[in-house]
Image (tube, rainbow, N blue to C red; front, side, top):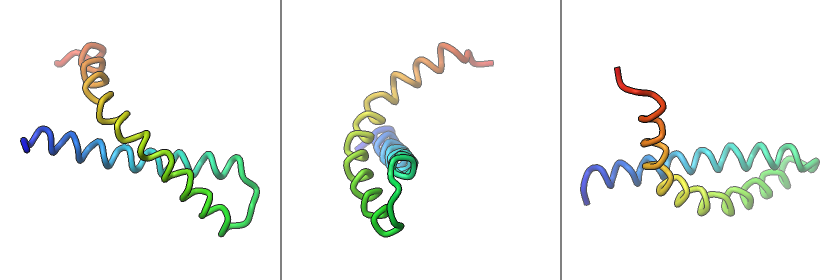
Length: 76
């Protein structure tokens, strides 16, 4: 496996993990008015639903975003 593919896989994994974790936690906190233990279970379930969606999205959208940023922010 090439270094660039390893880099893309690792960066997509970490980015999607952290994004799904933060976003699912924020959404659960806003929408649920329940006890702490139930909140943690609901957050876990929301995260486990969100991460498999976030990973392929981050993996396949990353090159598109990179090209767009390169067009919007020219090199010096």
